[in-house]
Image (cartoon, rainbow, N blue to C red; front, side, top):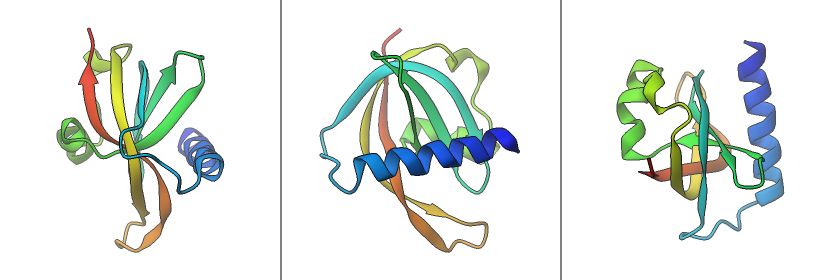
Length: 110
């Protein structure tokens, strides 16, 4: 639970830094560090500057992970390029709680 709280704090912090100015074509290349679910599912990527980037896992590749609330372990450490957009965080009842960075597409590089 502490890890999820940390992910949420980091997520909110990243959203506050990035604000609503996401470009539709913004991409991040990095390595998958983790995947965690609570009311929403989040993918953590370490970018080329070794900064953690946490976003809602909203790509088609995430669908089965989100349903099962687990990412297959073979993806941890994989290099990826993600397309970044905005997504809505929802609570367990489906109420929109806010917006944050979301990974809309994932391209696996290795």
